[in-house]
Amino acid sequence: MRIDNLFADAAPPAEGERFEALLTHKNLTIERILSSAKIESTLYVQPQDEWVALLQGEAELDVDGETVSLRAGDHLFLPAGTPHTVLRVAEGSLWLAVHLH
Image (cartoon, rainbow, N blue to C red; front, top):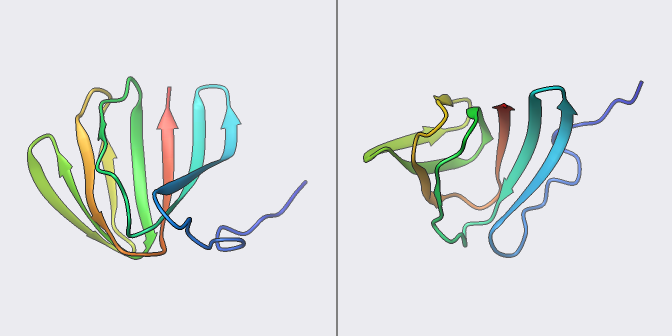
């Protein structure tokens, strides 16, 4: 058994985002995402369902043409095939993403 902490080594990268797989098991992947305020807006259309929680910080996303504002504690389900883009994110934002393949 190994115990880790979501907030350990949580300094954001100088630019972009850092994706770290915390658990991969069968059809499930849980990852931690650390965001810099300097991100390149990338359109994601993923083949798997995704549940994402913003643990700290703030963010603004475009989800299938709708602007969604998130603050610490908010979570969102993105069904497979849903186009989404992170438009703006606060420096040091920390996400937890669960992918169901």
